[in-house]
Length: 142
Image (cartoon, rainbow, N blue to C red; front, side):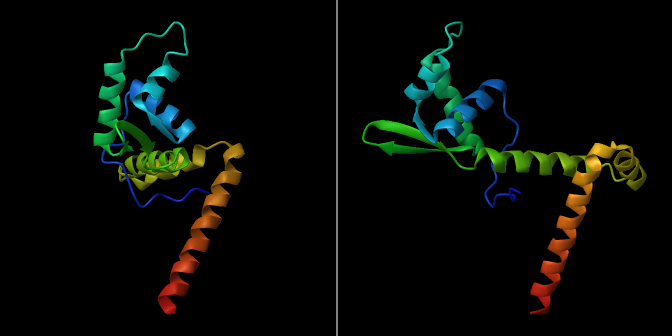
């Protein structure tokens, strides 16, 4: 299970091109804007200006998803969190938004209506929560 990262981007929402470029960076760890542009243009039906790539890369940097490192005259970008950490953050955010409904009956009804295939997952979640509570209680006692 991927834990929530200590670092969190300033803004979780991403547009389609931002998501595409972030996935390219995740697949390669560290790339220049030219590398990113070249990867996008490997699709012969795709047209995208280099300046557009730079704009999106800068936006991802401002949102806190990637970091820029200068090496000589080149700029290279790398992700600040992994793809798995981003998925965990997104799930965490969505779950909190769902729980903000505030009506325990709605949340309970949703949980009750989950199909039986999900029961194993729910039981695993419950076991994980119990283990975390026990660990927290033991650390508070010690």
